[in-house]
Structure formats: C-alpha cells, structure tokens
Length: 259
Image (tube, rainbow, N blue to C red; front, side, top):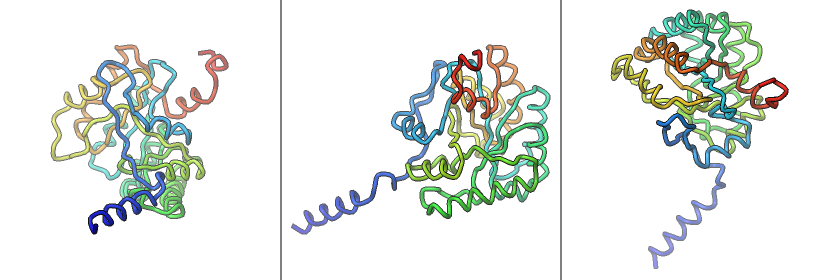
C-alpha cells in the first residue's frame, strides 16, 4: 500500500507542473546526405515563436555563426579569414567575452558582422524567472551598444541550447529571435583538438542548402579550417548569407524579392 501511495504521489507531482516548465536541449539527427536534419517536435516549438534553425528556402546558402563565451586567441584569425573571403557571420557573445575582449567585439561590428546575445552569465534560461532572463539579455545588449554602433540586437542563442516554451515566448516578447543551428560538432574542448581537417570534414559531412553552422571560436581547429572550408563550399556552389538575410527571406515572399 505504501508503495502504491508513493507512486501516486510521484505522478501527482510530475503532472502538476505545466509542460512548458520542462527544459529541452536543442538536438537533432545529423544529416549526412545533404538534407536538412530532422529536429522532430522542436521544429514546431521554435517556429511558433518565430525562431529558426535553418533557411527553409532551399537556396544554396549557408550561414556562419560563432559562439563566444571567452577568448582563446583565435577570434582574430577567424575575423581575418572572414574579411579576406568577404563572408558575413554572426557572433553570439556573453558578458565575460564583452568585458575581456572589447576590442574584438568592436572589430566584429566594424567589419560588418552581426553580434548576437548569448546571455550575460551563461545561465540555463529555463531556470530563470522572466525578469531575470530579461536582465541577462539587456545587460549584453547595453554593453554591446556602448562598444559599437550596433543599435539593435535581434538574435539570441540560449546557453547550452537549453530552452522551453516559456523562454521561447519570453525572448520573442523581448524582441529577440531564437537562432538555433543545423550543423555543429563537438568543437569546444580546447584540450582535445584534432587538427583542422577534422573540423573541415565535420562541417562538410553535414552541410546542406540553408545550413546554419555553429562553430566555437575557442577552437584552434576551426580557425585553421575556416579558409579551406569557405573555399570548398564556394567550389560546391554555396553562397554565404547573414542571419538578417535569412530573416528577410523568411518574412518576404520570394516573388517580391525576385528570387
């Protein structure tokens, strides 16, 4: 009898919480055939709040995005390559990064890249109240505005890719679009780098039209692979867009754009 009551009590506790209170970690079945990966139920969840993980137009365009939690000495090299190749990118920065590498943040904006919000202290958004989540985002936005001429911060990438229905909704209310990704690999372990060819093939093996590519700038492999990667993608017929380009295509019908 005691066991039965324990099970019933556990069930009552579990189902007393709304589904939106549970945390989800962004994930998908990796693509290896040039197709968009299957994200399952996450797709409708983020679409409901106008988020994205891919350019659904089918255009042979890819989007480079970089997460910057701290500086390891490679972001300058990444920026050098992007400038040389004429490729736009979005850099998602934290408070620590802004405070420790302000000159690099300034350079990102000066060279035409977008700066996105990766939160001030890299918390799990699903464990925060709405007000605390807003504070995390506001602090990054305000700090970037003080350093650069970027007056509008449109994109947010949740720390660790963790989200739920509430955080998606709140971000939209705050004026942000959730930017997830469709190509990524385990590249952030600075003591387990495997050489530039590993990073190069890890991206090419997953790439597809409309891919939003996530890379971490702490990776030496990524910095060394980037030039080769851009050249090969161009050879395969890919073009490079910014996340602003993606949003324009998402919201303006193709006939109007002349596409």
